[in-house]
Length: 108
Image (cartoon, rainbow, N blue to C red):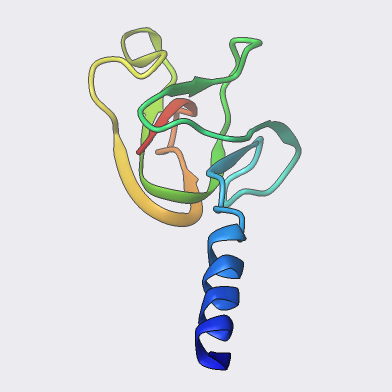
C-alpha cells in the first residue's frame, strides 16, 4: 500500500510541473548583446512573430523551441515570407547575416 501511495504522489507531482514555455528576446547587437529591443513570450507553435513597431534586431535569443526559423528584414522576407534564412532548435542565440537584421521568426 505504501508503494502505491508513493507512486501516486510522485506521478501527481510530475504532472503538476509547469511546461517550459517558448520565448525569445530581441537585441540590437550581435551575439545577443546590446540593448534589449523586445521580448516574445508564450510563443505558439507555427505562429509568425515580429516586432510591433516594425523594427528589426541584429540577434535573437530563444529557448524552449523544437525548431525556429529566422527571416531577414527587407520587403520580400518580412513577416515570415518567402523562406527562412536559418533554422535552429532548442535554445540559443542567432545573429543575422552581415548587412541585414532579423525581422521575424516562426517557432515550432
